[in-house]
Image (tube, rainbow, N blue to C red; front, side, top):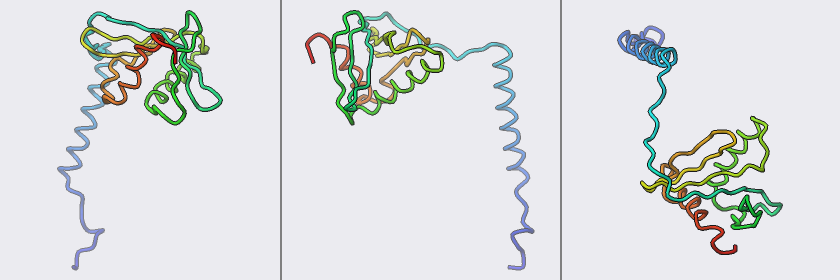
Length: 153
């Protein structure tokens, strides 16, 4: 117990390893930025079904879903439910606000031939390519909208 904490030295090998890892990470990012390398896009199949919707927050906390061409209410997301759907829409709405895009342009929901479901905002170019990546329950919140409008809410 004669050795104090102040007398101990951090292992030199661990410091060198951490410095090498940080340096390698910075180098890889710099090379990819300078060379223009982009992440590989997800290979998309053909769209099987596409629906466009406008989403409006209501006073009671619900989210109203409208068909943009007719302004008909096609679905209502009850207050306090579907947190994932609400979060995704808030994120996309934030992007629209930053780009000074209003609430009028519709969002596009697409089902692909490989079973994926994606959500696009054509007005900002933002896209959530695979809603199933967030889990089946979260994807189901959007999958319900693929049949919205087939019958009144």
